[in-house]
Length: 119
Image (cartoon, rainbow, N blue to C red; front, side):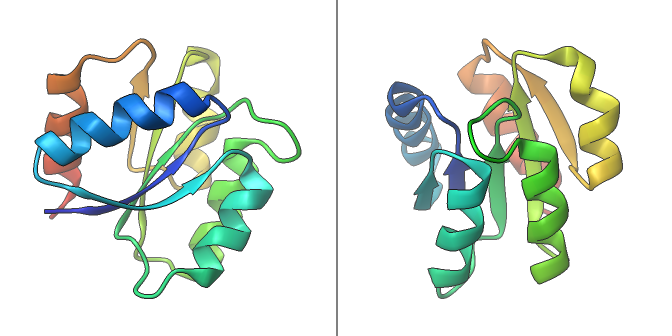
């Protein structure tokens, strides 16, 4: 089971992802709607999530900037990008993302990616 924080500016997507993750045996422990919110929320969480699902295009701070800053705080957290913008793949990986999924995403692909990156 992974403990997961969701970072995406789409509130409906938070609900959908949380349901998929819960059914898949994971626990959502945090929600943020911007990269800046993600940093604030992450600092507050205790214990820290082991996985973060990160969007790229968000107001205030994008996902790659947030990824770099989060990994400076806790280098062991796994950040899995989920974005409709495939052109940011290299940027996400360079920032430290362990994987990249393209929206729209299938439930099975999401759960498989989390399982793959848990070890």
